[in-house]
Image (cartoon, rainbow, N blue to C red):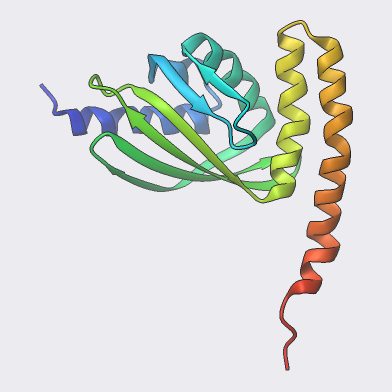
Length: 170
C-alpha cells in the first residue's frame, strides 16, 4: 500500500495534468467531497463541495488558457503549485496552495494570482459565465458592466503609469 505522501504526490500529478488539459472531470476526481476553494479576488467568494467546484472548474478552464505548471513544492499534507497561462490574451500567473485530507484528496484550495490586469480580465470573463450558468442573466450583465471600468483603469495604469515609477537610470 502506498504511503500517504506517495498518494498525495500522485494526486498532485493528476491535478496538474487535469489543469494543463482543461479536463474538469479529471480535476474533480482529485477533490475531497467537502473541498473548499478561496477566491484570489475577494473574501466574499468561496466555493464548497465538489458540485460547486465542478461548475467553477469547467468555466475556469475556458477562461484561463494554456496552463503550464513550472513550480511544485510540497511536504506532508500541503503542496504549492505555480503555473503560467493566459486570460483574454493577458499573461497570467497563479499559485495554488493545496491541502489534502487523510485519503490524499484535495480538501482546500487557496488561489493567488498576478498581474492585476489578468485578474481583472478574469473577473470580467469568469464572473458573468458563472452567473449565466446559474440562470442569472441580469447579474451576469451587471458583473461585466461594473468590472469593465476597473479592468480598463488597471490595464491603463499597468501600461502607462506604473512604468513611470521605475527608478531613473543615472
